[in-house]
Length: 237
Image (cartoon, rainbow, N blue to C red; front, side, top):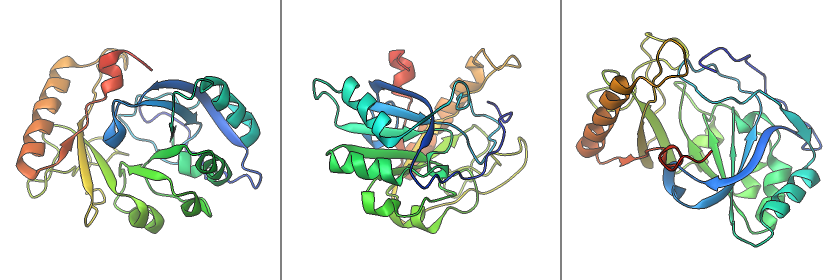
């Protein structure tokens, strides 16, 4: 994507139909559930354009009903291997995921949502999802602020506030200063930014090394937890 995606407005289908890029089993690589088997659902579209985003959340998107998604999950979980379903994107909160999350909750799955936290679909709080918010803006939706216990920040060497180690650079305009939302009390995760050369394919190994070193220093200085994209180390999607 790298900031080239089309910005999409929240799409709240009253029946809970969702535009989905993929549903697959894997290992959760980031945040508080890292290392655990999980079924991922990548939803299409995003209301932001982060210049460093390397995720394809637009290609081959198809519309699914909640029943169709549940059937696919049951196929993948035929041996009762998984008890975690992760909704990611794009921006999963920009679609009406409440009916799906309620079905998953009733089926005894732990539902984890990976979000930038700027929007909130009606009634989602009743499904009691586990929210991991990676703020990309100065403010987040009040429901996200109230319901999130785990906050993840993507760190880049030379772009952190000396006072707390967290980002002071815009996610929407490269090179512009911007202080992202800070929670009052919560678990904070810091993760080194993946950076790429001009072809947007080859990772800039030197820049990434500097970002890793910076992230470790910030975590040790402020007592944060490090998130390291374990799925990339394991070479799983």
